[in-house]
Image 1 (cartoon, helix red, strand yellow):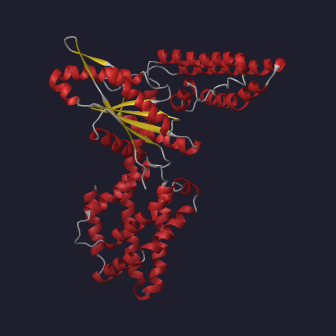
Image 2: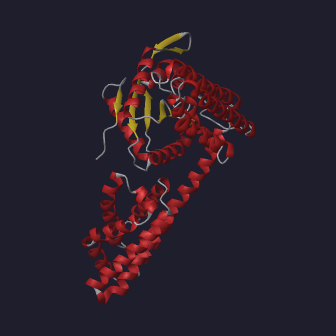
Image 3: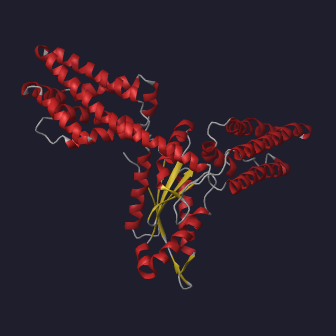
Length: 452
């Protein structure tokens, strides 16, 4: 498809005289700043765009990127290799889909950009305004078409993957998950009552939203039962308990305690009933995991990270990513064969799984690399988790064929969400931190460096 667009682009440029092409290229270089400012101001008029562009890094870089785009697209000549230029437009479209930029917003920006060009040409070159405006409009439209191709393919792929993830979410041994989550909810209630009996003022009550049950339901359960009224009822109940009932319970004294205690118990009982109904309504389907470790595979990573980015931006929360690599794994395969390597991978998956909360995610990315998404976790918390994992792996003995054992270490890269809407950013940061951990000697934790 890009080759088709490159041929069409070359044909389009050839339909205009060298003089017009030269004029447009010169103006693109000379007025890119004014045109970028015009485009940027138009984008900020839209509430959806203002939210996407609120991040400091996006705000700071947009102007420069737009200037570069204007100069590149409108300076192209028929004799140039246009294939990379077309590929770049497709890539831009894919990024727009990934960060959920609305199509109408991009098209509106293109229209405003063409208007800006028309006014500039009227001021500086009125005698050539018509032909030059036609060329500018045709080139921008062609670039938009290539972008739309990338956007459509990426958007369609993302939609299919999201639906596959939703189905995958409801296929995980529902009997086990049902019992585990119900037990967590009841355990939270019992802990709450116990701590209150000890004295609410000296023992602050833990919010349900931050409990293991609350983390699981907000970050996973809501997706499993997407659109079900009972799921929204549980979310509403969590909010009411944390915002109303727990504060009331902590303030109550003497005979005032009975009413908030009864209301809390009723809310938990209704949540348990709704949870039971939700699990009953969803039959267990067959879905795949990583065959060896039974962890999530990287297919669902974009869906999970997109969802966590959206959640974090809406709620001003944080989440962190740990990229984990088994040190010198090739040596294990060389010395003990693939059977030994597989045994280490399975044991590593089990160790990591035992150290995450219900709302967190654990992936096997392939080979000896794993990735952990820690929800509602800032940088300091993520570093503590990473160091705890590193020590536990270092202290463990891993079983190998023929009753042998071996010590294993891991290197970890830590990155924390900084508000940027593109999830690829946090992946690049954690990968870079992992690389630094490995080059610095392995068996260590490195935190991502702040990007300027």
